[in-house]
Image (cartoon, rainbow, N blue to C red; front, side):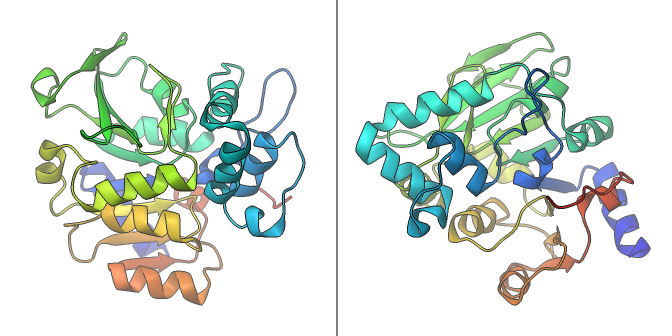
Length: 281
């Protein structure tokens, strides 16, 4: 294990390994006033959008499916408003993973979560923010924002950003600097279709990412949505493609990772970061 961790740490330090962050990254994030945990996992998000009540088993299978059901009943704005209410709240604590990653000064991070934790961690660091968007009439499936170390400014195209600046990619959305969300089945169908077609990643990043390796942190790979996202985001990766830190990975996850060239490591990301493990609820 030590040898694998050493390889990962060396790659991170060299800027050659890109973290791909999932819901478990937010396992230690709570609200300063209520003490409630931030909704991050599929089940947590479904309960948050449905007034704390579980939905039918077929809808509980995956958050996008449940969000689609809510959208059909109450409209897309109902889902978007709920996500903005959750994630624009400034009362959430900082995730331990965010603090650890911030200390590494990485050049590129992919964060599937919709919170602002990493944006806050990078608040004084000039960088480029790429936010996924979906279901628009034509056009690219991302918005670009340039951060000068003080605030964000919208960038109409790549000419308005520094191509060498660190990149924070938020495929599923964020409330800052303007709210955009990818949540429902319809959102993901549109986004992933355009991602596969090459319209959801800026051209300069396609060139810059060649040969990089990836590190899956805080994500289970049991569901099709995250698997399709991961497969496209690590396109043109180095060989091997990287690592997936998954405690107790099942056979489905192992086969999927093997197909992508990712080595499954039976470890929690907190072990890599030398942080205390969190007991399962």
